[in-house]
Length: 128
Picture 1 (cartoon, helix red, strand yellow):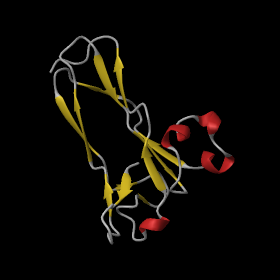
Picture 2 (spheres, rainbow, N blue to C red):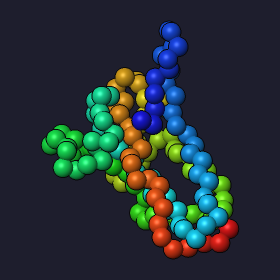
Picture 3 (cartoon, one colour):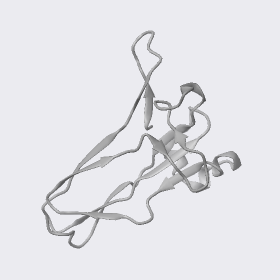
Picture 4 (cartoon, rainbow, N blue to C red):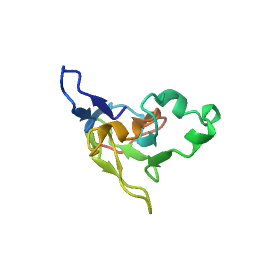
């Protein structure tokens, strides 16, 4: 999940994943970054099941999935920081907020960084 409730007693706040650090090897392989974020109703949603289209119910199939238009090949032998937004925008839709940024956290849709956001591909990545 992108946002988790505070575990301290009496705390009503939520924490949100803001940065992901990726260290790429200095080896003749490429590392591709293609983040995909899924927003769906119901806080009990399973991010792994959400990644499998055949396992979706009709209600889940209308959930919003936001992704980059193309993968980004990361430079070899580097440290890359992926900064995640606080609000997510889809064309023609109101902004999607996580439980950490919504005015009413309990009403916010569940949000997940889907599997496959980072992959190792054969061949050479750009020189660092």
